[in-house]
Length: 262
Image (cartoon, rainbow, N blue to C red; front, side, top):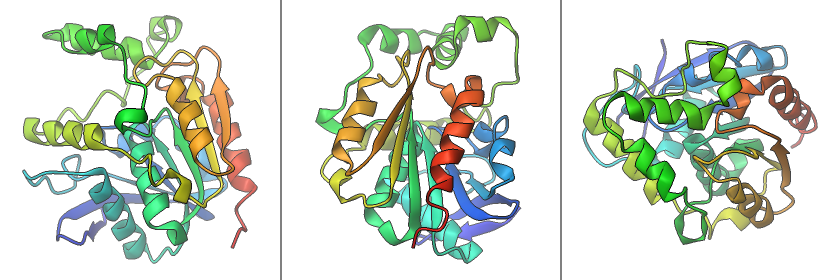
């Protein structure tokens, strides 16, 4: 597996696949590239997909030091540099959407088109999850895992037994790295730089997302110049997986509009 070296010397594992216009896929908090396993093939015919393991996860280095969303964005740039890719489409979901916001604002020349899924601007302008959700995720033992599954997927989909589910965190991730990821995500506040995003942007969110309230999608779409908003009825946080038949074509059609921009 290839590795890129970030500006501070941390080795970032990445997984390129296929041909076509490059598309970077960014996973959620405390997850590896396996987050995308069940839907990555949907993008393969049209794109050279690039996933990565955030620092602290998977096959990347795991320094016990503060992480930041800005740092994760710099790690993405290091991967693009290692691949010799000047510009790529970027599709970030959950914390990956926070990374994608910073990437597009800080490095506009590297982002062709931007898709922000189930994510938030962060900071005081964001709509926080409810206290009931926080309490459910703080329960001891298996109860927290059960609560997370129910926030990610609808009861009907969970009842089908479809799995394994790769969106519930990297099981091999050290506890300190998990805490570092949480702190980085919580510190994210892109409100002031969102108007600087110049890439064509699509914001996608499930209408029934309580983990990252749907109201955040409206905030992002209103704040980013020219952004489009698409809400998927009935979808929870992992809309891209459970509702892939809707989400996949939606994203592909949007990216196809901008494959030859610039």
